[in-house]
Amino acid sequence: MIRLALVRHAKSDWGDPQLPDHDRPLNDRGERDAPHMAGVFLDHGFRPDVIISSTALRARTTAEAFAAELRLAIDLDPLLYGASARTLLERAAASGAHSVVLVAHDPGLTELAETLSGGRITHMPTCAVATFRWDEDDWAVIDAIEPAEWTFHSPH
Image 1: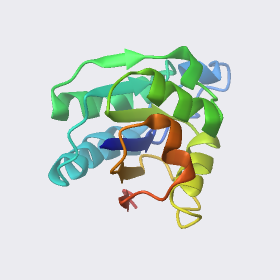
Image 2: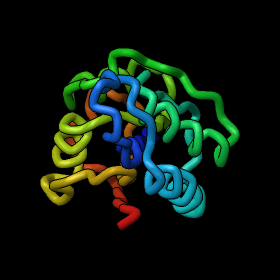
Image 3: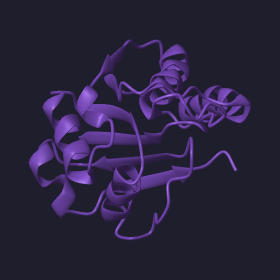
Image 4: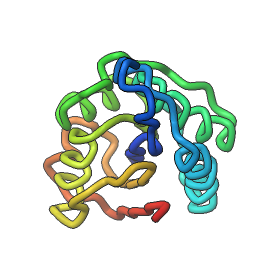
């Protein structure tokens, strides 16, 4: 069985226009939403083998909230910053794990969630979580078949 959770980073702070995009922190709402959504995620019973996060500060901070709830370390992957849907799926598969959480960015996350949900998830707002489960054990086929189940949760 393969399980994949897509987590868009929580709301970031745009207060300093001089700050590089990669270094933007979470704003107050993001600081509240990340632990809240990590708790929602945990309540729904998804137990990942690995959390893989973009190296961007806002994604790393979001991943830290999930890691604290799940008691897992975070694997930082620079390829997740600005990644396409295809790259996101490839990075999950490359992890070698059967249950993966990806913490990354739009538009790639929305594109991947839309593809995997058969068009039913059309937007991943900040700190949204989409989970997918397939009864297959091969990452190579999951984007070609419908998941056995999927969920979508948003903080707002």
